[in-house]
Image 1 (cartoon, one colour):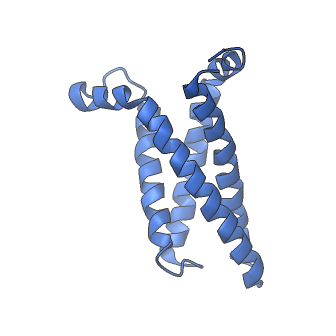
Image 2 (image 1 turned 135 degrees about the horizontal axis):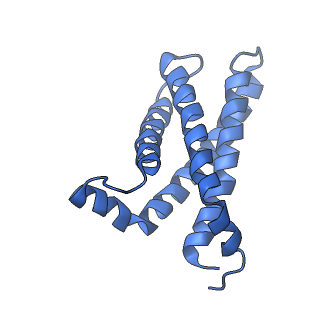
Length: 142
């Protein structure tokens, strides 16, 4: 399997981990057990760091696409992918900012959650559009 597809499949797995743990963390934040919230928080932070690392590799593999936007504008390139990139950047900034504060029930934590939900919806569309390519990638050799 080609390296780009390995990265993409890893990205899908850690995306699922980050999304599920984010929902779990949000729900646990409404509960009374700090220990449960803490466990979800650790799971979410670790999963999301892995997700961020995978995204960095993914973007690096598609660097020419981003350079094309900078040089020639968006043109016929996928506007959904461009929006997803910007929203993910905002999600990452808010998530990293939350590491430095007590984010439990904070306004920044709520914004991070809402941006995360939007990111999940757009990312699902991004992945679903590419499902035929992902299926073919399972038959590729390195």
